[in-house]
Amino acid sequence: MNLALFSETPVREFYDSAVTHFAERRVFDITEEVLVSTPSVQLIDNILTVLSPGRLVLDPVINEEMHSESGQSMLVRRWLEFCGSVRLLTLRPRQYYASPPYVSVLQPAAAGLPGRIVLEQRVRGTADEPLFNEFCSTEFGKIRDYCVWVNEDLDYYEHIIRGWLLTLIITKKKRLRLPEHNRNSPDEYASGN
Image (cartoon, rainbow, N blue to C red; front, side, top):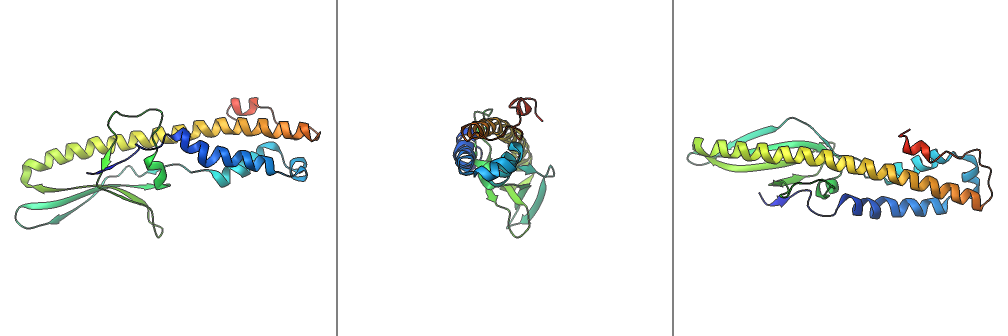
């Protein structure tokens, strides 16, 4: 168990560098013609659709396979399948455990198959199995919690950037003295609509 998940870059830092920075630049590159012809909310949706890092989705089923080895030992492999960017599994959310979850292998999605978060151990006899069961239960529980927290943080930062981009678009329209009929109220995002 040597790979720590959710222990690198904070979600906010990642979101700012991967989404916010580029979204601002795209707003500044919007032409006057597009500003006039496209509602502000649609402009924001178009920008964030392209830049969105997506979300993590975990299959709740724990899969298992066992391989007999010499003597009394077996290699036990358990995994959770996931969809979403592997990068999201490295981000540290605002809420986190003092000790991150550790896994044996992290397999990204490939060839239309979901990714896998794998725990494996050689188990010798019945004494080792309960310890591995407890370890798996703890680590997979942490992973589930972290996925929820990362997704909540991504939703939170997306909500903030939507309001910020709307402010930038409104300001750009005012500077260009464009009609205000396409403008949406910043309160639209504050209310969650």
